[in-house]
Image (cartoon, rainbow, N blue to C red):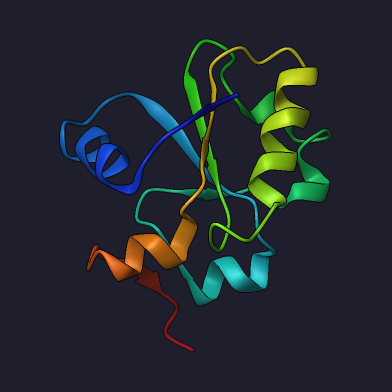
Amino acid sequence: MNTISTDDLKKKMDSADDFILINVLSEEQFRREHIPNSINIPLGEIGRRRDELDPNKEIIVYCKSFQCEASIKAAKKLEKLGFEKVVDYEGGLKDWKNKGFPVVRSND
């Protein structure tokens, strides 16, 4: 499984690369805060929501931090479902914020 660093993810976003960024945490956690332009597909829903994903695009998954294993599990699940361009963003939300990059927060 391929991985991507925080800086490389930011570069991909800044250059408007065509990829899907998936936050695999719960909907509640996603609403609280997430990386801009990411979508939310919780780990437990990956299988039944696979039709929402374009198998020809690179898919980058992330969760909370280096210690969180949800993104690794999601990446493995996507690979088993036949997705070939899956990348794990290991640093997750915590590393993203530690680098001072923006997050989207809910207004509630």
